[in-house]
Image (tube, rainbow, N blue to C red; front, side, top):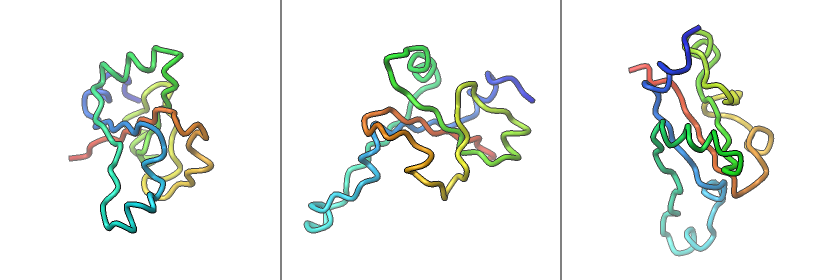
Length: 109
């Protein structure tokens, strides 16, 4: 298994600020306006700072499949998602709607 540092150099990290981005905004639907996403890119150094801060309430999720995790490893402290596209939000994500969620996966290209 590779060390975590090389993984950090090749991953794309996306942060969701709070879970409400997943919720449907009925006003947006009625007015035919798209809901604004709360996705943001986060630099590896900024992620490391967040992970070191116990008051940041950041949750790190690995969206790679089992084979990629086996060959490339995982960032320490990350929780593996059961699937990269079909996982149970209520079961796998924290119930705190204000938590910072960070998802990453290995870029195979």
